[in-house]
Image (tube, rainbow, N blue to C red; front, top):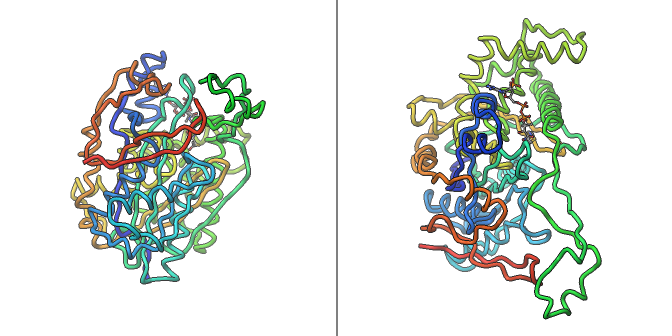
Length: 453
Ligand SMILES: CC(=O)SCCNC(=O)CCNC(=O)[C@H](O)C(C)(C)COP(=O)(O)OP(=O)(O)OC[C@H]1O[C@@H](n2cnc3c(N)ncnc32)[C@H](O)[C@@H]1OP(=O)(O)O
């Protein structure tokens, strides 16, 4: 019995700052960002958008475009590292919003939960749903990924920002891709990228002191959540390489093959925190699993790094990237990082590219290399199914991305600092964040959303 992705949809932030504008403002050579990292635009949420809004919009589109009967959906599992609450999962917001739109109690028997493991939480959610569908083949599940990849101003993560969601219907006999049963995992507890709770003093919180009872009741130090991570960019790249390399070779063992595995993959889909991450990281696996590799394993660390650099400059590696990785990079260049959604957006980008260029890919094998900081990698593969094109007919990925609205640098900084109070664009046919009811002045409270026709 085959299990996999039957339908896909997305919702990404509709505002963008050209990378060139950011580069000029920050005194960075634009060529480094455009040609070195593959960045062209970075998308940013409007004032009425957050991770629940993107998730609800992607899910609504998935349901409408594929005429999904919600009574058939047994699970909605969410991958995110942009939770808006420590107890109440994004999935519970989605249940409420979908029932508002598609009918009361339509999801009363649906199981929902959020999965958090940095950027790999969506893959974890999907693996779990695939196992569930194998055991319950008459049922259907939905996986949603949603995030706002927000980094501090002036940090090295700033140019990789992006925001949005993906939603996928998981069924038996899927129309788009059927996954094979082998999944290799490699895990190690590290601090390459994380979002710790910060403490602030009671005095740092100012507000309506006319009502002093709320202030008197506060603890001397208050734990707050900040969207931006603490991270070490180069170390996170090393962790990415270590985990994916180890998972890749575990996957070869699971498949009991000594042949060069990546040669059997027509396309390679990796977690792309920025467009060229995959091609920059894969050269090691490419060299180690090659028949005539220049790497012997006897090198000093510096020699090893030099040989990797040499490998990545060869015409063979460049052709390999062009053929197997480039289609996944296209959307990433125009969006930026989607954290949990990046690997699925890379998959969608590849499908949309072949759809637009009229390439037939039924029967192709796709290899997936997922990564989440903290850190974990999963390697798995799937076969493209005969009906993939029909399932993609309403998705319009690149047409939608082409309509993104350009903002200037001042507006970008205002949005980032939450100083922009008015929406930049008028919402239409989408969910918005309607209001936040504050628990106590200046502290965030319950969030409420509404649909705008
Ligand atoms: C969140 C996760 O998924 S963990 C894994 C990834 N980590 C992150 O995303 C964390 C946040 N991001 C970051 O910290 C940073 O953006 C990083 C680490 C990804 C990149 O760091 P930077 O220091 O800006 O860039 P770095 O020096 O690594 O690479 C720049 C590239 O541009 C190239 N470059 C520099 N100048 C130019 C130029 N003028 N023309 C062309 N290319 C150029 C460099 O050669 C280099 O490419 P190469 O190594 O393939 O040769």
